[in-house]
Image 1 (cartoon, rainbow, N blue to C red):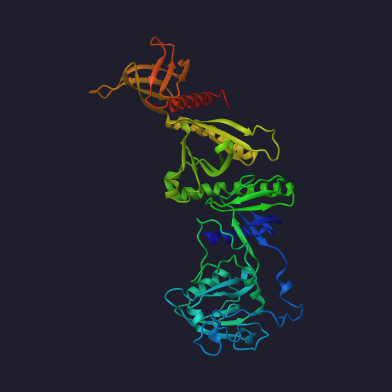
Image 2 (cartoon, helix red, strand yellow):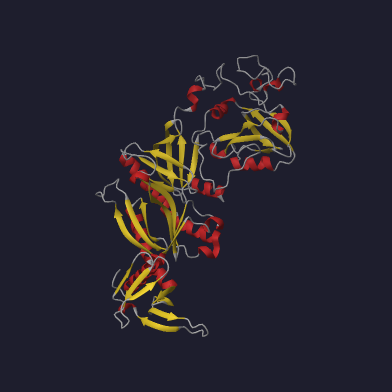
Length: 531
């Protein structure tokens, strides 16, 4: 699935490209070339072109005398006595040394090497390159003690021309991986040592090695480690698939110049910080990436429904938000959350719930029937390009009223969430229709049923009979006032002969108050009085 997605992403239309800076741990800012497509952002490391320091500018491209040659994985094996595994033998030094039987003596010659695969570790090599990287398939690592190393005849920097006689000249990285995996126990490799590409292996892969989403399958490798992934091409680059990423501003770093934005992974664990040349550039990049992510949301809904089955049928909307956390000393922090609106609840997760186990354990559940939107707009400061857009909800819970403040990134996002939440609360009223609460009235244990259509019914269940004894019944329009003490009492006044009803709910009355509010709000909207 992921490999297919990556291939499809590479074929998409280029929406935007240009230089950005990325903040690398321990290295500071690093210039990258960014390319945005509909479903991916590719970052390629810039810096001096690799040719500049490796060649003397000779027209035939022959290396300088002192250009270092890669040492074989176990240098001693090539030299005098095969037993001394650790002393560097001839050929392990630079090309200027005596030309021993190491790679230096092997330019331009095709060698055929037979490798016996081991049970564990396969061939024991990693490869780089492939047609998509405009590079031959080249051995980039030889793991000590494994099959390739034991031949004593393969080197880092060997291009693999054929596997068991089948040519790899036009193979993509993945095709080469498959050819090597399926080659059987005894593998014959046609190889030739190419000096030109070894510089790519020595250069650190600053961008390609960035850790990213853990929920996505890793790329294949040939025993040893996964450094044979397609990211390790001649160019130090990495493609970030945008589906369910979170692009945000002013979340984890102060940004007085308005030049920064960050991209966070769908699993909520990784982030990259990017910087534009100026505020306008950063804003344009941010809006373009945000737009691409938003456009992928319908596709995410379809995929979630497929993975989660019937339990996900009711997802109306989802996306990343930042929830405000109150810290000690009045400080506030923003915590990224995935908010999912279903037909009955607002669910909050720390990561995209791509499987049923994750789906079944949200970190917060706000029943829509007991939730209402209480604020929507920019923060109290005057709206400007950097001002925060927020909405707030209140939920009546057994602990009292919970207020949650969420931050969104754009005005369009704010209006979508606002509309969806209000509609969701009304939808939940029509869907759930009825709530029953046990309570005490005038010393009697009674049941208060609040029905979306018919209003309030107070009843007392007879011990023997199934049909409850109805004590009071009022439609919504008879309710003149309602109040509560915030602890356990709910007061309803229908101006009936019994006077104001004082109902002891034995727990916080706020859920009941919020349900009454939701039902009334939904009824008023349905009557067309409020849009």
